[in-house]
Amino acid sequence: MIWISANTEAANSTYYFELRDFELIRNGQSVKARIDGLIGNGYAEFPCEVELGQSEEVRIFPLWSEGRVEAVPEELDSDSFTAQLLDSVRQFMPVSYKSELRRPACQRSGLVDSWTLDRMLVA
Image 1: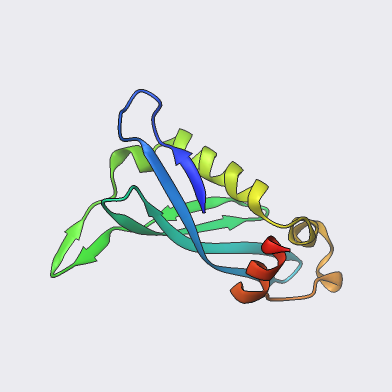
Image 2: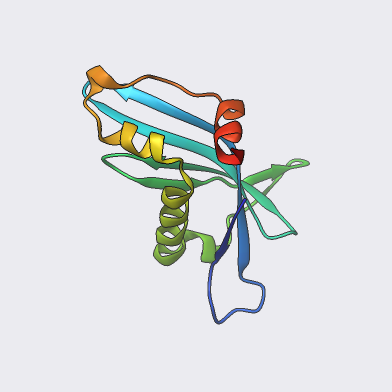
């Protein structure tokens, strides 16, 4: 779990990112890491997808519950929050997968399941 502050001036601005799945995806000569998880603050959790590689991106999805949609809070949609989340996830990744993103495609190993990632992080 990664803790992130959305806005230092707000009282309830601490969020967590709970990692749920990790995958390395090859596309021709490039590779990207996709990390799926939940962003939450103790009151609501939103599905989130972080992509690392040549282009980096954070996608936070609205919450669908009992026929209604709970929109993503504005503070989670800010550039500073996105930058903090990307930086935190980059630091959290095991060194072996960071190097995997930089190697030529012919030397890459492929996908990893979340159980293997959890074992590596605990070890």
